Length: 271
Figure (cartoon, one colour):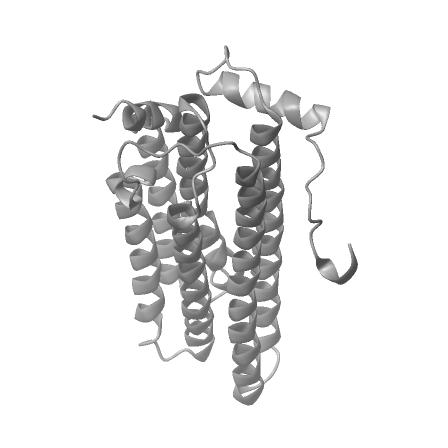
């Protein structure tokens, strides 16, 4: 489209998208529900937005690696310029994620405009519902632990370790703001549903959006590209232990917490 604009009228859902929507419904205990073009369109835009977001994060992590490597070659003055570049990249990351969220919200809004009526949630959806205490605590602990390790390196006398720590702190700030932006989008974008089934699907999509946004995979990737080449063995060991323990904690939490469809059905059955 010229000027990067979206069309005023969304095209009908493609057969492949309808088929994926049917698979999605079956995977969430709604196999007896016929997939609609509205659901297929909403799932398709989320799938594309997540793919774009993954590419965006991968590019950001590669840029962090290049900035770290470049700072190993030249002096402190060059490092300061590279840190300014990294700060600009962090701002760009947040803005790009905001645009992806805006794109999803716009498609949802257009889809909702075709509904003859709008359904409403029986209870208000907050972060405790879409993300839950365990995942919220895990995400906060992961960011806090990574930040503490990075701050601890600032007390070292080695300039390489301090440079890596500053890169980590700037990157972590960008990732934290991105998570907040995504959660805000999940909690505030309008409901797109006209019956109980579509309302249940709407809740499931919100829960999955929140869980994907809060996943700490990028936090684990940052030290890999900016820490493990330092000469401080104990710092590398601390980061490695942090990542391994975080992965184990996430696996245990995934096994013990309710699936998104279960949470959605609980929400819909609330008095």
